[in-house]
Image (cartoon, rainbow, N blue to C red):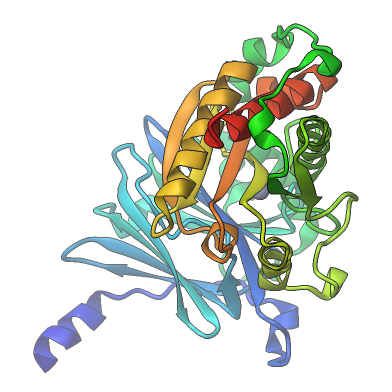
Length: 396
Ligand SMILES: [Zn+2]
């Protein structure tokens, strides 16, 4: 047993990571891992970890079965980060994310990729304050751009000067698929305008207590689209428009926020959990009939698009039914591809006591869908879809 352990340890390689200047202070609150994103191309896999500030990390390579382990130090895993992913492609079969101990977030990639075929490096600037990027496969992070390699791969012991990382960041953005997306991005939004006054909703909505939760807000913009449209702005517009429609039909609508602010009374000081719990508290205290959290999706590959409705995996059948009703109605109304009704472990649907769902209306990272949801017409259609889905859930 001890011998086997020793052999495993011998296979462990620790790669020194850049040391953050702010990190030597033990009193510093853990950084938050905001998102883990993946992208695949024929000859490369990329993992991007969005963190709210600079952190220290190391990696280990394990065999039997092959794994790459990334330890993010003095960090905690955000509530919205998926705990498991099957990224597809030929490099990585599965990715697991977890809070390994109080201050370490561990990401495990199941892969047979050899140690010399991956690189890991930090990026700053862009949509998130700090990113840890891992590339596996040919090209090592500069596929199709051989001149980039000197810039992209920072020496492990560099001091992390921001000027060079700023450069690499723009390359990173460029690599996320603009080439194929150009045509798509130019496509106009082709939904017809609608007069909300003419929308008739079922009378079953009368007296129903509905909580609408526009995702993100205040300091937290959520995802940011290619032209800078923020998730938090779209979610609020869709929610407010749906609120008007539902109230017109006699429902009692409770909004978790009506402005660009945090929901938690702690405002800027709120942790992610404070913020999410505050949204659940509103719904639980109100004794709402249903809870709907509105979000926009985002992915490193800008071609990704479509609508998804999530319900808590261990939640009620009613939550699943609500998700299905809303998914149907929203997709019908805004013409997006349906990515399906999925179970999840998101905080807000787990900690609310009534049927609860989280709707990802469309992808703000997709230029066409960003444009759609940044337009009045797109917002109106999304809100109509949402309201119709709610009515259908109640039997209308
Ligand atoms: Zn979101």
